[in-house]
Image (cartoon, rainbow, N blue to C red; front, side):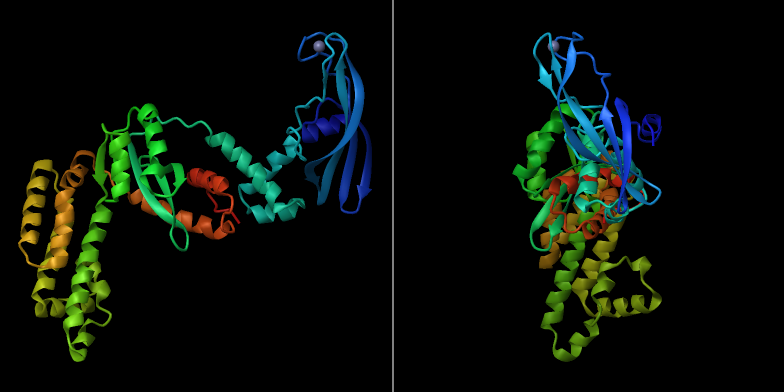
Length: 401
Ligand SMILES: [Zn+2]
């Protein structure tokens, strides 16, 4: 090792190489800070001398298969002009941390194609240290976000843990990026970020959400000028739940013998007819033939699927009004409840034809989030979890573990 090799291999400047020690599996390079720092940072005069010293041990990238450390003799500096006494922070150091910049860069390089656990094992350091380096990098990357290019926003939720702990994510629907995440899904939880968007996302036109009361309230309060678009997949899901309710009602009224006809039939009503295999189509048909209310509601469900294909907003509106009218007159309670919900929210449903946005991209992200949750040991560190969410769009590999 030499002073110039320290510089060329590890970008370490401002030191003189002294010695190398081999201790077990480790190589320890000893170096001493030189007197290249001549200027006082306070008075800018060049009357700086050494006054006191201490040793620090910093991680370096490995050489071969050996772990490397830098034993650095650091000198305290004293300015004879103004009396300023200080410990310098050399450019290869990372504040008071136990690693060099070169080590941090190596960690980040390895994380591109490996897990946190594997990187920690390879470098012979703790999982926490690797995580900390990654967290700081991500925090720096996502500290200042620009929302000028945000035109369409999607809001959705997922459960953090089994039970009732939820997280709300905000997604740029055009890029698929998660731009923010908060714990909870109440008005109080989501309002601060929406309020921030009011000032900073000046090009925002519409927000896609499910029909959750609290999201709608928070958007209306904070982004009054922005359209709300009820996500079409959530509307399909609402209709499916209605059908399922009706099927259960009918099934419960049948005697044991007749109930067996419904065995395994649940999914027949929920899937799109065109996606069913022929055998299932036949079974569905016979169930529908025998149950008039189910027949009616099922056909209305299929019909609702065509609603989204209208190119003219005026025709779509006409269709929705008459669809709701037929549903409300049907006398089928589960269906009437669905229609009342849709009727109450018709303006936000019809906004789809103005912007044509859905949360499909958000639903796609949910699968990535599931993988992330599984891999990162339950994510006790919520801040890191959120940073990982913001970084999901860049993660070619799910290297969390
Ligand atoms: Zn000074």
